[in-house]
Length: 267
Image 1 (cartoon, rainbow, N blue to C red):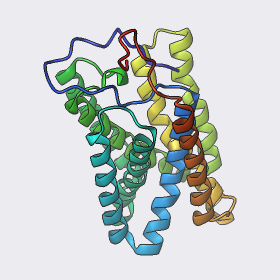
Image 2 (cartoon, rainbow, N blue to C red; image 1 turned 30 degrees about the vertical axis):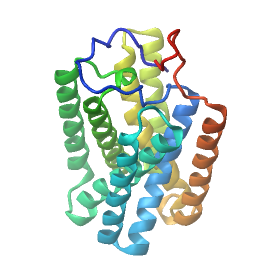
Image 3 (cartoon, rainbow, N blue to C red; image 1 turned 60 degrees about the vertical axis):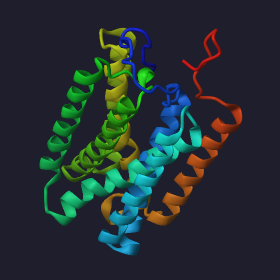
């Protein structure tokens, strides 16, 4: 699934520009995205159990701020920086959803539509400001700020949605099947139907979160909870190793970078 370049790319205002700092949407993008969602789910739970909820949230917030600070200082896409920021968003987004449920007692049936409303508001504000939601136009500081705010909201929403389906009867494995089928809907609707590329991308982006998180939970949690019982630490380490391997490959191969135009400048 790819997003279109030209249809949603109005002229940019005369503000400070950078090269587009979001990678090309290829199979590698979706593979690493799913890996980060699962790793963030189990890493968040592992940190909360090891350090306690409050220190874990504080550490996650600091790590996220540091990763985004590095990402914002760069002038062009760098695989290691971009995916480090996504991993930290995944960890902290999971914590945000869990704090509402565990710490404040908010049910997933309430937090899921609440996060969906937050995401909708962010999309409205982004489009009202920039007249586009295309990831191919993230070339200004303001658009990059909207982009990462939306990414954080999608991770929190996906965490709550995945936990909601797991606790209302689907279980973790059932949730994996549900969201694996669900992610095919925007792909097919875009490929064979009227769904535009930008809407299809963001719909699939949201669904990858509960898909990866449900898969990681199913692998890590005990048999009494319907899981394989592999443990939080082993699953976190395994998924982290997979992420490092995939990102390392992107760095070495230069895959994911945008094709240079005739001018020699990144698209």
